[in-house]
Length: 160
Image 1 (cartoon, one colour):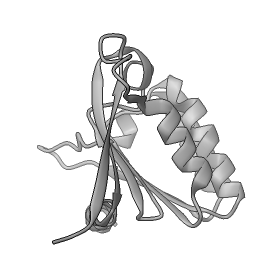
Image 2: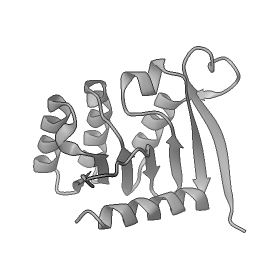
Image 3: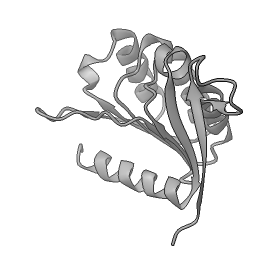
Image 4: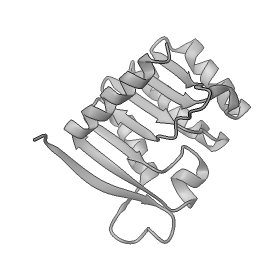
């Protein structure tokens, strides 16, 4: 048996107000608290995600390693592609891999920090996903977060 704890996170007015935390501030707190590593897997990053990428840049400036697997990088918004290219140029500890399998997609959305904490759920890194849609995510700590980190390592290694 492994040891983990979980907390439900939400977005959207219908889910708010039930004593549950919102997804976006938890993600911001986790990124700010990173000590050595941040792993992300995403289906889409909208132009709203520029603020999210700014938080990652601050982590990179602190020497944190950041790895991102994104579905079909070439199909992401141009503003996002430009910002990701800029981060890759500025920071050697930033890696991005594009999932470009012909008949498959990455639809997972997760952020893992230091293999200790992970946010996993339905929310894309978009305005809707992090603020206005009705989304449910789970914050896990402990062994479950470490396992998610291992899964992201595994998918990333298949894209090299």
